[in-house]
Structures are given as structure tokens and as C-alpha cells.
Image 1 (cartoon, rainbow, N blue to C red):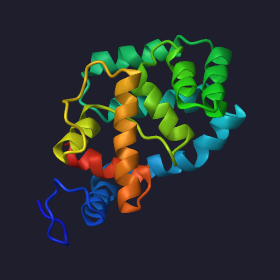
Image 2: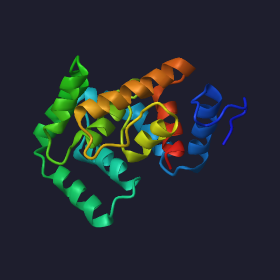
Image 3: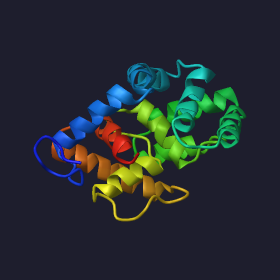
Length: 191
């Protein structure tokens, strides 16, 4: 695949990312609701003014857009619902308020049913200007573009997530795009 300036898709140029992100907007069913949630959830999560369904939506969003068998997806969503409501609010607001990224991730992964990958989804809807979700598809998009060398790890560790996020941020900075635009492009590229 080539983008409009003739470079290969292996080069994540602004044109390539823009084309892939535009395809995401046209073709991905979650695009509109993601945009709405990146506008509403950051403040709600920071202020603690959200309900269980808002937090549950993030977990559902993470799993329902991936090729996860239905029984596994339902089990993961149910594990999250085992969290005490107040503990869940404390973890999410604590992650939103934490000053360093390691502490943000620690607060979220302390919740039942929240591994590093799901925590990355919470970070993406808590601080969309700086964080994006990670999964096999996005990781493999970066790998296909030559931005990461190793295949997607299983499970994803905190160190893996920081490596991935640093690569996404480097691409975003290099081409003057926000991380969510790069994320959308990677989702398409890794598909």
C-alpha cells in the first residue's frame, strides 16, 4: 500500500497515518462513540463523577472490538464487575490524578479483571491526549511499520506497554499528529 506522497505503508508518514485514520473513521463502528467518550470520560474519571456503567463501558470497548471468544469476553467483563464500586472509583480517580505513569497503571491494575492491556484502555479514556490502548493488533501495526521489532507479547507487561506507548508517541511527535490519530492508523494497519 502506498500513501498519497508515494511512500510505503512501512513508513508512518503524516499522509499514511491520515489515510489510515480516515479509513478508521469511515469504516470502524466504534469511531463515533470513542470520540464522544474521549470528550466526556476524562473529566468524569478525574472528578469521580461517573457510574459503574461508564467504567464498565471501557472494559466492554476493549474486549468487544477484538477477536476474543464470546465466553472469554463475558468472563473478563464479569470479573471487572466483581470490583467494589468505591474501590473502582478510587482506583480510576487515583489513576487520573497520579503524577507518574507507573502509578497510574498500578492503580488501575489493582482492580479485579484489569490487566495492563485493559488498564491502557482506561488511560486512553482518562488522558486521551497522552495515552492509547494496546493490544495485539495495534502492536503489530507498529511492528509492520518498523517501529517495534518484537512480536506482540502475551501477556503485555508494564514495560511492554511503556515501550509501545513511547513508540506511538515518537510517531505522533515525528509527524505532528495526536496519539489517538496514530492509534486509529495502527488499528487499521494491524488488521
